[in-house]
Length: 454
Image 1 (spheres, rainbow, N blue to C red):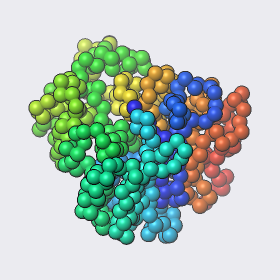
Image 2: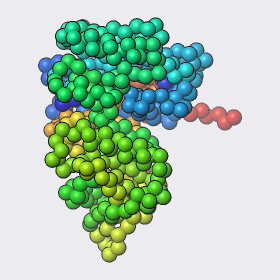
Image 3: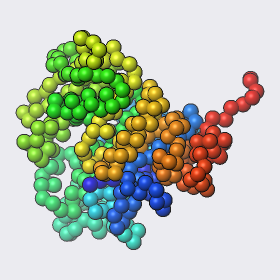
């Protein structure tokens, strides 16, 4: 079982000084049944983020996405422009990324600093945080100084020496993360349970547990659409939201048909990723093989893979209750398309997912947005999955629906920097209408409009 405790970023887009998105639950007693708790931590399963346009909400989601892509794929073209450009000072300063996560009964902190302008890693570290807040390092490195330390977490000595051998290969290499290196062609290293598995566990958490949905993103890891057994469940959920859909089918198509609507280079990357996921499945008898859902402007496609690494390509078709014909996605409303994009959040049985969703209310009627969140909050009572959303939907800011610590803000300061904080920092009574106080400007994070026209 895995959970996000916090995500910290600094010097990235509109975030200048380090800011923290914290999933630690406060001392509030209401709705405690949908929080996670054990003897070491108490965590939220839901967080809504409010803010004015251009405050930095989407930049927060972009930070999650960039962090994940960098760990998995390294530096990509365009990364050097993503430092905070609001001050020339930040151009040559390190950008910082750090996550604190719970994996089973342990808490780990992983992070790195990188100078984006020169595509250079200047620091990388991983440690276990013990109950008394002390740090038990797995490793700590500073490539530009040629420094690498194997921490006391790695034992026995023979394992530590093995890590040093791997580290020697990139001791001065500032273009790659050591966490990535320890997950390249090293499957044999993790066949037996040992302290070395922390490299695989943390890497897989970042690569597979995080599910980041940015605005306009057309690729998800969702697997429900690959299994015909779940189609009726999807239809029932769609009708729960009033869409009057009678049947959902997937029609087989050729690879050529798909590539006429989707770039071949992206398809090649997706197929390579599916082969990788297939190879790490522990239970080859499991019928739910990996799949990826991709969406063009006109359609939804699902690319699947079987145990022999054969690929299947399908496209979605919908039949409405009051029509004899089937409809392609391009004939459906934006709201229907959006709901199909994110419906698995409400259906997944996974205990290892952290969904990051930009603009949850995009193309949704306000009542649909509210119902979607209510449904998730009910699921959160039973499942240890987390959902973090950005939104402008003011009706969500209801203390009869959400805890104070489940409501957060991104605010643009006077110098244009983005800052994050929680509603829980404000002394607001539970009988107050939070959204009214918000629009009065008591929590900031709202547009500042001028009466004057230039």
